[in-house]
Length: 307
Length: 318
Image 1 (tube, rainbow over the protein chains, first blue to last red):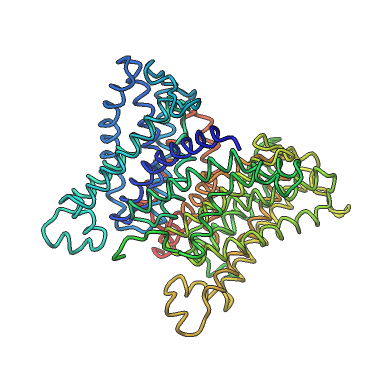
Image 2 (spheres, rainbow over the protein chains, first blue to last red):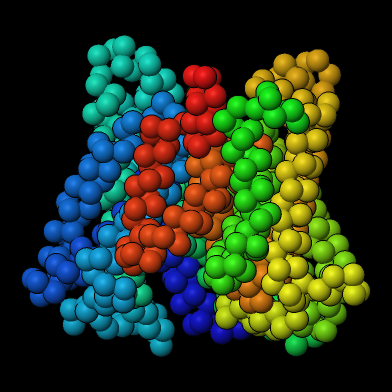
């Protein structure tokens, strides 16, 4: 067994995991509190990446651009909430899904119009572009470590906000009984707006962090958003803790499957069969996991209380 | 229903649209515009898929976001046998319908245990599973897609290599699918399905096992859509897994809702509006998808009931 490869792949899995968590936490909050299904969440992820790409070009600094791109993504989130989403809270899920699918088409086309059909790469500063030796003879890209660290910090901060602050209390209260919260004099509309913008920032953060690795491209959000939905379903819709555990689980299983499944299958299959079936099975693994979770716990692993 | 004296806007539009589709080959022959025939053939194939989605979505209240998977299964059921030079159309269509039924049964078994947004997401995830599975099978083209070199052969009964024959084959299929869905919805079975959409607990308390009824309905819809997929595979002579991507499931939903979910003919009108608008707008601007997006949002916000709802209101005014 190659331990170096194993550790590297665990870290890669964690990096995918924290990215998924950033997306899934916004989705799960918006769904948990507002009962709103937002397919266009992936578009905010894409907007974060493109804003950051252009700002990096203008300012010459990726870090500065990242900090400027976040409020811009929040603004897009606010606009989306005010123009479209707000009118849909009282509708059923089908309407949510259709209208936000419409938003995806609008966003993808808008990006094509502004940035052109080709992807935009984001150059990293030198101090982030290297590799560090994490263990003797095992190197890992600095930037990927930064992604993991950022994700973990955001996770802790979110958990603290939700469990230990007054805003968090309102969020939890809103999740269990919206009507009661507004009867107590809380402007639930503003709470919704704020949460939607927070979700947008988290999605934008995920997008701008992956863009230096993969480059910002049209439709980049459309693939990962489905995986983010798989994450919140496994974790239990509305639960931050569930989103975190499920995101890491999905990130690790996906990465491990892609790198080790063929060697694993070779233990009890012919080499040829293992090599043909491994890619197909590893691509399906997270969906099989979701199906298994739903078959035994239809409400997810950590369903929030009071729903 | 069959007496024209009782017809209102809705029935007239249904009859006239089907008649227009049926007579289209004559006009395109006269005007020598074979391109239009291709457009309508594609439209009718997608309409069959939309009609099948409407069976579970509009009538059954099951919001499936993974219906494009059945189109893929149906198309590969033509493509993969053709790859091994098995071109018997009866066999291919049997495989398409059978494989769709098996897939619908096992995914439905799990999905239908869930409700609301969980159901939307799990159907979508299962479809993505099929999508990724076909992308990673290199033998059948992987993500480059599979070229289907020969169309299905029906033992000399008729030859769908001929454009007009294929067109009428599709037309008959569409009419048959509509008739089938109409018969299903007017049967006792259909009543239970609609009842379970309205109030599932009430249906259960009067003794219906709604889960089994829903599962059956879900499987039937999958089979019809698999059939549409087999037609599409024959029509395009090429199938790429990209056509099963979840955005295409979203487009099918759009067609149903645009035409009017829960009405028999609405999905056909919705598909027609979608395909013709796509054709028209994509000729004008490469940014046509944004117009589609805005239209979709407007339909959701301001036009519940879609085209069929509009026709229904026309009928009432008279």
